[in-house]
Length: 108
Length: 114
Image (cartoon, rainbow over all chains, first blue to last red; front, side):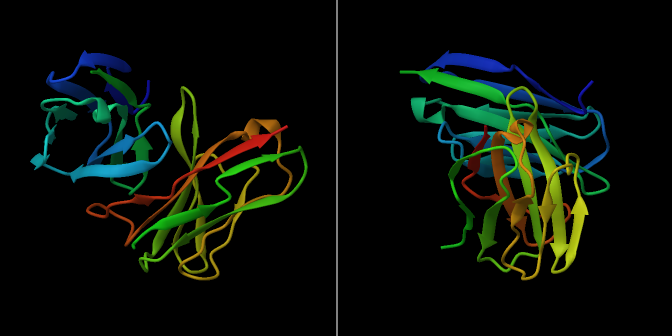
């Protein structure tokens, strides 16, 4: 069993829909990262959080430390949000463990 | 502009021919790392460096070498590449290792070993 599990693996939705991507982890963490990888391959960091909730534009990330669960939400989704979203947990030894990613496709 | 650069972006080579993928950052970051990304396996760490002359193995170091002679550069060396090293490689850096330090990724190098 992977230490960081994401769901769903693939998600197709219509433009405008509210999107939720989930991440569960089994290790103690010091921080959790959400990354975005566009079709061209480049990776950018979206959020880094260790508690509560963060918001940036239409993106919201939440984390529940007790339940070892994080979610990434996209409001009013747009085709340009189509990408692979990767959850990464930084454990207490500072090692980063990556989920396998969620491939999101937003249809116009 | 603050960035991590990698070269080359694409490389096709043959088994056994030594190659180096360069990585450079202009943010004065102490921590640098190499990852490979394979379908179905996600990102896996190859090597990392916490500062100049300090390097350590990640999860999949076999067949790779690194060096950190200067703070800004962290080259990845494949002494004798094999087809199972065909992958997409990313270099990343952060100010320090540890929670609260965002990682900045390079654009990736797609390597094919024939």
